[in-house]
Amino acid sequence: MGLFSLSLLPPALVAVIYKDGGGTAFIQAFVLSLFLGFILWYPNRRHKKDLRTREGFLLVVLFWGVLGSIGAVPFIFSSQPDLSITDSFFESFSALTTTGATVIVGLDSLPKAILFYRHLLQWLGGMGIIVLAVAILPVLGIGGMQLYRAEMPGPVKDSKMTPRIAETAKALWYIYFLLTVACAFSYWVAGMNVFDAICHSFSTIAIGGFSTYDASIGHFDSPAINIVCVVFLLIAALNFSLHFAAFTRRGINLRVYFKDAEFKVLIIVQLVLTAICFATLYHSGIYDSPEETFDYALFQAVSISTTAGFGTESFHMWPLFLPMLLIFSSFIGGCGGSTAGGIKVIRMILLLKQGSRELKRLVHPRGMFSIRIGNKALPERVIDAVWGFFSAYALVFVICMLALMGMGMDNITAFSATAACLNNLGPGLGEVASNYASINDGSKWILLLAMLFGRLEVFTLLVLFTPTFWRN
Image 1 (cartoon, rainbow, N blue to C red):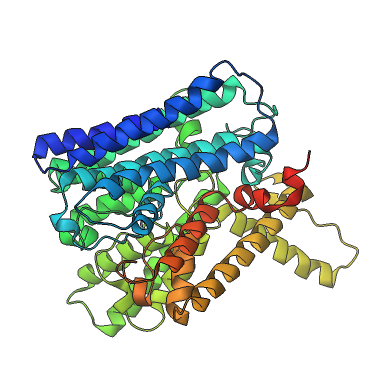
Image 2: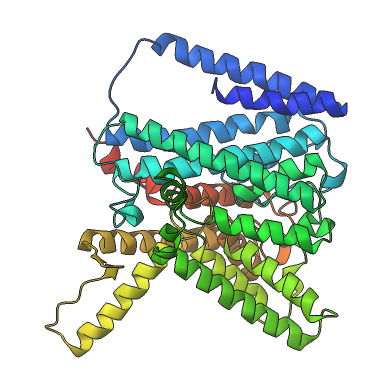
């Protein structure tokens, strides 16, 4: 909490630079956060003990829960926007989990400090996701999607928090920071002003989807900016272990990407989605030219399927099945170990391979079939873990959707809102197509929990609800 309070100072500085009067809330929140952090730290400052797996799970959940709560304080103190406590928590958790669902209407007229803070929260949350997925979850024994990459960093054999995690996290920070700088520079060259370029680079590399305008990326009406966004969304949707391997071992080695099965499937999914969207939109004759049609189709296909949620067009107004297709594509999401949400490409690959194996077993009941990624046969416990994850994901989805319908939400809105928050996507259909301001407070708390379940890979949070976890 003490360290996190430092993140409240840059928005205060932005308020001074732009003289927008939004800095007071951040100074108040900084003092409160620092004070609370100090009184919790001081009595325990000499207590040192190795973390066990149980404390590891609790620490990860508390990390997101506590920092998401502290992140809500500036929204509570701020007079513009004038948010309720529920809306403040919703906005903060949406930013930190990189979901990108917003309850704020009228972004164009907000103080620059608030706009910057929303994007900064997403950027910090994105980095937390990378370190969580690549460095910490394997230690806790649930980094199953990385077990097949023996040559990659990430899986840590030791059961304690070792220096290897710190080294891996530091390298990931460098990669993440350099990608953000490159993205901001590209946006600036493409035509954004410096402020918008920095903010959008934060939310692009974090695959968050927040924008400084209600019209999102569509505000700029620029094919060049759209292309920059698409390229960096695809880079951020790749496993950061691949970036680590490609750029930190004996110079640059791009062949690492093309050897990776997950990378190939992600690109194929994007190409197929773009082709379907382009063909349907072109046949419908909504846009004036093939070039314009392709621009909209490519951008929305990549933005929704990688769970960013940026918009150049109201995709929920598109014809036929396209809105539902794009919502379903967000269940796949990006690669494991990326800032994207969803079930992840590697898990989908393993589910398909397992399904194929069961079909073969029907024909050859005594046959022995192994599931391989590349040339490596996977242990059965990896397949079991993926099936367990998929079952838990589906269960959480159904419970959240039924709870929303019980709150009076219509079917389409309940389905898409649950999908958008559990997959950390942001925009949905129906009432939540543009923002979440109109839904009731109870629904917002359910969706806030769905965001946490999606971001913490379900099991990390679900394990806290089991009696076994709390037994000595």
